[in-house]
Length: 422
Image (cartoon, rainbow, N blue to C red):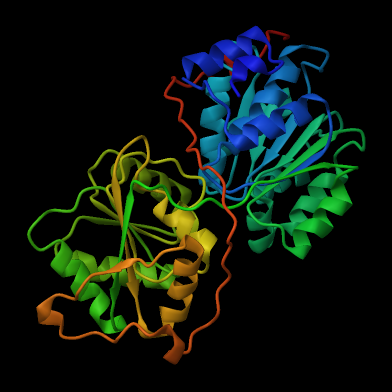
């Protein structure tokens, strides 16, 4: 289905055309009409399916039709991380370019100047507030934020927010919202706690469930079967003759990220690290340097695997086998974007063999195993049945995966976007 076949206003279609959004992804095709009808919605869809447009486009369409207060916050979009909030804000700028809709992004880890900018947007009544739970609650507790006229409440990546311990924060925010509102929830998975949250804050919601897609065919997937002590040696061998270009290395924890980063720097490799211990300014600087190719290798936790749109990643290396099949898809989906080719390499330690076999079962194929460099000696045989390891989850259903397109338009200021009412 094309966006022109949906019941959208001309100014929204003009923005979509300028961003080269022509065909709807499955989640957009199913979700946009439901939201336009004013129904509550719970949708299960993974990152990379275009879900940001699936909720922003219909909400902006309704706001552009008028009838909503100009001096009030009309929509709250909750995001689990600063990075995802920033990305949603960028998409918001593009979709709203030909409208008078205003927005402000509210997230933590900033200096006092940015906090004051967020406060100004919240007190003036930005039409759309894109926020992480903790920072929005901090502003709320200071007493100057009025959510009593909010018409739209969106929870993006709700499962991840609950995993990060934001349930109480979310419920405190919900208490400040009017009962008469449209609530929209997106989640990559549907565990019991998400179902319970949906029953608490949604009213007779429509349900959409799209299965996890398998990785793009353009991604070349290979694995090394190795001992844990051999993993750094494999990286050294991979980059011995050629300087790496646009590589993300995923590790299982922030402690492991720090250890790997330190080891790679000792190899004289140009490395940056990304994890939750960094200040927001540090994280933004690292991402900027990586996108500008001034950092060749980014070592990261799964903070980068979901919802961060970086084109032209040449290789993804799983230093540790991901937690489950969905995490594997999210991680290696960072490469082979924007019609580029990509390589995904996974280091499979002894105790990780069962987990990797579960991923192979989900993929429906055997991942090609590369022989270890001679200087590292022999590795273990690949025989998952004889190695004990924590059983991971795998998802076996599939659907088409479409990567979200990014918007490169320059940012409009809050003041220029807001209707002149003062």
